[in-house]
Image (cartoon, rainbow, N blue to C red; front, side, top):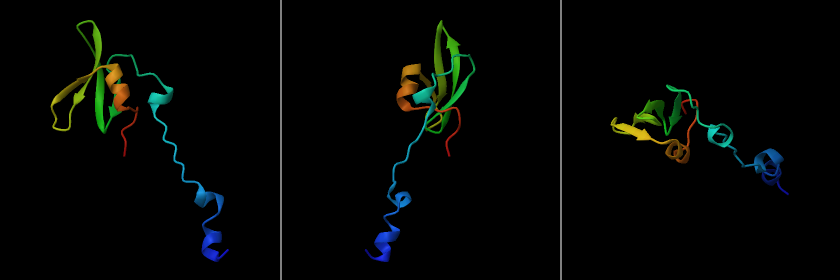
Length: 83
């Protein structure tokens, strides 16, 4: 085994697994009105409207966008702004 092989076979250099944790895996979406979560770099606020709860934010062009809780779960979400 040469020195390059020896340097690249240590447990730290072989471990390439990255585990990303999001609130969608461990926490339910907030239910209090005016709660804020982030999805795909954009904030969404929980609003009550016509007897239903909906998440309101904007799309990539700044247009209003309304999502259900299920849609927000599919898109992924976090309590903190990414990046």
